[in-house]
Length: 367
Image (cartoon, rainbow, N blue to C red; front, side):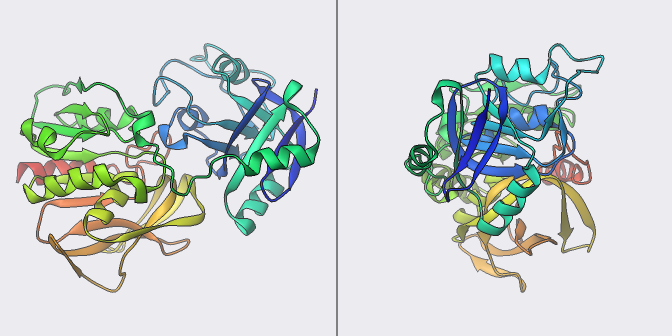
């Protein structure tokens, strides 16, 4: 049986089905991580995206019950080069192919993932579709269907992946702080990293208001990663402005960094092909130190890089920059206890160079 990956600009890649058979649509992106495919699949930030893995072998260690970052697979589709023929890991409960079929994720194995990645780097992320089985049709028809599918620009997706009801992740050991965490697409490891530092984490829906957050009287407020276009997240921006007005310590990651940027009056823009993987070099501008970090974002904040700038909440600065393309990777208020980064310090999967940011948040809350 054959399968087709069809891009909106008419480029077509032929392969064989991997995972479920059928059709799926989404934004075509690539992930450069050599490990962590299970965490990638279950990251809510990948909602409505078809993810191509640049590592040649995927599925070697199967899947297990410990590594998912949420209760389901969120990617819209999956593209690999060479699926593992044998699952080999003592924690594995099933193969990746079985897992994808159970979750209804339509995928494809193609020999040309390198060509696909080069194409996306040159042309930018774009809409795509994966088709197999009864969904196959003449290419011209498939291209037309892809072009009629929704794009990512202007997509308001955080509420689609967020928890519907609040829940609590208890502190490990003695409770030192209470953190209100707004779930814009939170990964399971993030509240765990806070809990390991003595934080009781109260996870709240994406639609929560500033009044509801402040009613909990938290020691600090956290805004998570998440999918979609930050320009649509007016509710989250309003909630954060209320938190900043109240003077509560704030820490945001990924989508939360973009929300802080908007709350400060900055704009956001769509990156050509985004940052997705566990090998992005980011420099802390205060110390000059370079961290290798885990990323998953297709949008960025537009902010002055040449020193502090004024905001409605006092002076702010760009705290971190990406050394590959110079984009903003972190923001920090200089007159209030608020900071954010564009990457994933919980690093599931990925390097732990940025784990100190959770400690910094605790220090701010304890000041």
